[in-house]
Image (tube, rainbow, N blue to C red; front, side, top):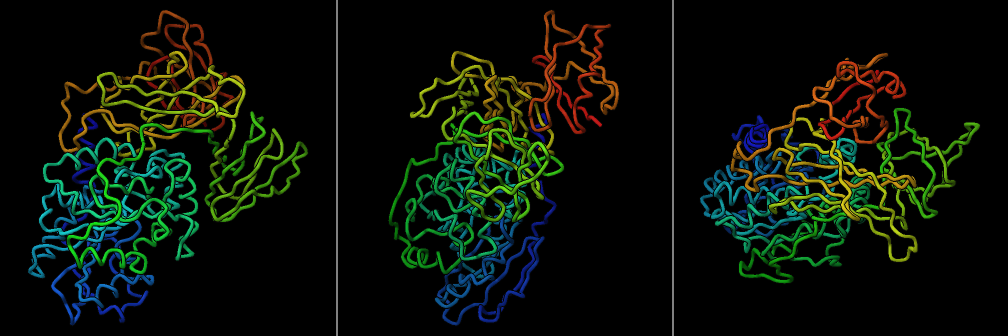
Length: 597
């Protein structure tokens, strides 16, 4: 029931924005300067000046998550000047910065009514940047405005989602998403939400008109014309490159392939080596868009019917370490001579040092360094890192075992599956004595910082499986942990959708698994010196209590002490914990939270 209610709130009424747009008249392009700042926190329609050679065609611009219109006609973007010079009426629609495709789609639908009425025209051409392309789908097909749009030119639209959004749904890594400047609105842009909810809904929609969409996907995340933005896309593009291939820093090229749409640029097209911000600029994109508007029947280059990115399986050769409050961490003994450390740090620039047993610190020369990101090669097998910035370290092992994660949710027997393989050049066999667990977050929850549950994967042959049907229906993110006695560690971030694929159909309460109530209580919930757990129905066998950090790192495992009226004293072991928030899991029961002072 929680998922049903939150889903309705998420899709229909997340925002307090009114649909009464502010309407602002822009001066001619030559009179606009970077000092012109329009409303940033309210749905707004900026009307461009009508050119003297007006040809009767209106072009509507809709932004993505980066801004509310301003980059469309400021910051040396030539779009306004280009369309004005050639006789087109330009209109810039600002919806919301990050409320997602359903809210922005509803606002865009209202704007289309206002604009077509104002100019007395039946249709407009829509140039939509990034998630504005997904808002266009919602406006046209869910909110019924498809007849008011002649064509949609989707610039860097992640129709299949982006791995950066997947990362944003894990609180440990949420600030990396914020480095891109996109901040909120990621819930409806994850790869699993787009694959299992968005694409089936629109691609099977009876009103779907894929022939109206022309998709433009760029491949040059490292090539920016806006120096201030370049570091952001270098960071995010580097993260994306390992997961989803060539990309523009936010949208993977494969994700821009809307089924049955015209695909203008091929992968790594030399005409599209620019980043996610540049693709929204007229000087890069207008010359490619103009021929389609001048000749409505022009459809060129690659036309696709079934291309889609592979998002059901991911691989990892890394594990994650988060710096502590002092901006430091300790690297344990390496399992391979080929390890390296890919670090993303909050401060734009920082120096990393290592300390020896005498606590003398020495600067580490980076293998590669750009703003917000540093790659280091370990100088020894056991070392400590120090910095003046909070950071996340991806400790990678090029030749160690690779962890794979796949899921099958739509079948009658849904499963989540983890396996391990060895790179071809390696001679050693894959160790299978892993302990595998995951921390899941209900991303339809109002607070994704609150973990939904710790789930344990069961070894089945050479694979580790979990049956998600025991969970309530919902949209979940997951961070998977694996470790073994050889000190090999792996992490992987993904997600899955459990339940009905139609976001507008309420779930049948009878088919929804009720949430399991905790079978264990910890007293007090804020622990200083003493801690006691009470178990309502203890198992008839030896059980284990496991304690995890709030991000799922296992820090303590102990057998259940002897019972005194189902009350168990665990004061001693918990005293070893540092201050912080922890999760305690008893056997296979639901995890509970406590605070250690």
